[in-house]
Image (cartoon, rainbow, N blue to C red; front, side, top):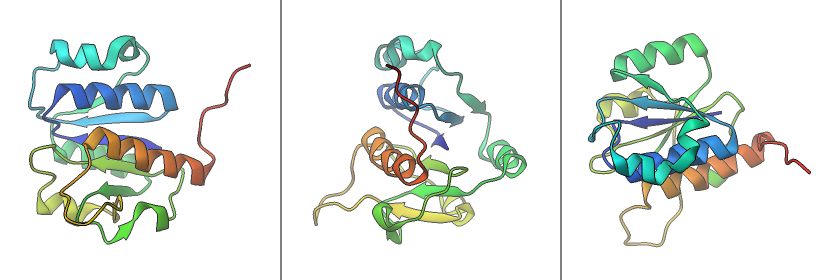
Length: 155
């Protein structure tokens, strides 16, 4: 299981998702360009010492990410408010890569079309969206539950 962030805008959200990926033992891809300087202090603050526990794969473009995904295999699952199925009714697989869009603009049509599936988090009517880091946690938790992919607890 992997998380992929498409051109993230907000370093605090990216740091939170780095922390999430580290704690849950999943890989992380960053599709550039980012909307902030990678060494930004806000990224370090949100990611805390977890930034030393995971090495995100940084891709210079959508095209380079797509080439890497083709080589790695597995499905690309886009989390989007325009998703056709709630994440709770989707059957996740261990090799899935969960793709999240930019906080400010989501993803372009080209990325929507490239996804193998588009899922959404069910929300109350009339509300626009859930914070991208929270959406990542909600959907990743369900995907790991379904695939028995949570890390082994020590103790």
